Amino acid sequence: IPAGISLKDAVAFPEVACTVWSTVFMMGRLSAGESFLIHGGSSGIGTFAIQIAKHLGVRVFFTAGNEEKLAACKELGADVCINYKTEDFVAKVKAETNGKGVDVILDCIGAPYLQKNLDSLNFDGRLCIIGLMGGANAEIKLSSLLPKRLTVL
Image 1 (tube, one colour):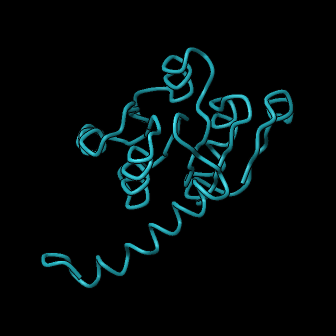
Image 2: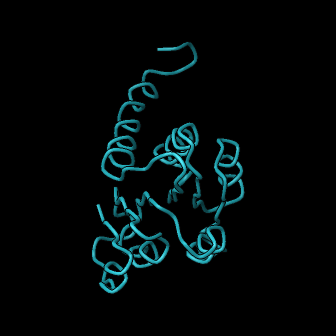
């Protein structure tokens, strides 16, 4: 363990790294040149996801709830900051991608974001759900999945 890093912090790293790598890169197939939206960008998983995605040549979008968190994520290399309390993330994603949407979304919120996430994805987009902080039960329009060949993981 490097100097200055506690054992508690060090043991958390593999869990975060494995969660992001297996979900986003193995199952979600995120690759260089694609775009990626992270909900909860200032979380442990979010901050790791920002850094590894940028290192691999991905355009990174993220949501966070205050200016301090937005600034911290921007410093880590994120390209597009979205304050979910004051901005519509679907509109911001569409505006920043010329109406196309992002290629992959990493979501820890769940139900309240499900339809909005589907609306934010590009053709052949992949939605990786890793948490249900906002709830587990949601209704979606299946018509938003089929024409764009979306995948929900």
